[in-house]
Image 1 (tube, rainbow, N blue to C red):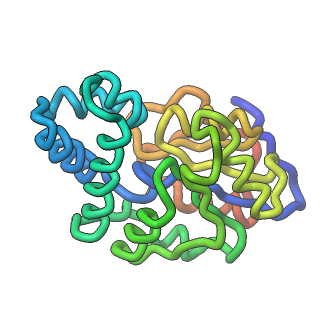
Image 2: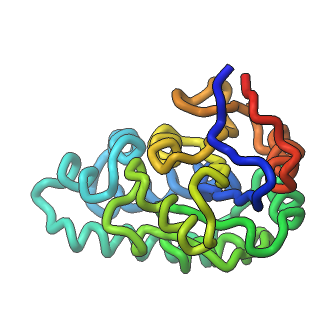
Amino acid sequence: MTSEPTRPGRMKYVLFDVDGTLIDAVSNQRRVWRTWAERYGLDADEVYQVALRTRPMETFAQVAADRDPRECLATLHGLEDEDVRTGVYAAFDGASELLHGLPTGSWALVTSNYEHRVRGRFLRTGLPVPGVIVDAAAVEEGKPSPLPYLLAAEQLGAEPGDCLVVEDAPSGVRSGRGAGMTVWGVNAALAVEGVHRHFASLREAVPHVLAFASGRHAHATA
């Protein structure tokens, strides 16, 4: 049992990661990287395995060191934008119910992607868009730095101790924990190290997140 840094009697806020948490984009990401690799005559599977572990510029340094990284990034961004326009996207089960069930102004998106792509994916999947989106361009340091989640809290007018972070990835969990927030993990068979609470699916987490937002959440966790 661990104690969560929440305070009773105050408005609660929920900060969501996007890819892997609210939207299932794994097949899209794999397809984009496969096309990118083919453009440069590289082995798509090898490139994707590197891309899973590193940020794009680091990926280029490993798999295409002889290429201009700015050109590589421009090509990748073009493919990602095209995928947002034409790719097939699916929200995780429970995402729509959850986001529509939260009070306006009580939640935000914190993503390592870019806002225009997030808006495009939400439009495609019918998810509501909040007033606060902290994307890759909004901060100098992305996850696992706590800065993205701290900025989201600041823009919501929230104290970190009143925020719940919902994440699927280790870097996001470290980011939320570093910001002094409660962190719950979703969409993984095993709990990510550092989460206060783990749910195998977003659907399973929905009633608990809504209870947190309403102030009915119990502070003890498994």
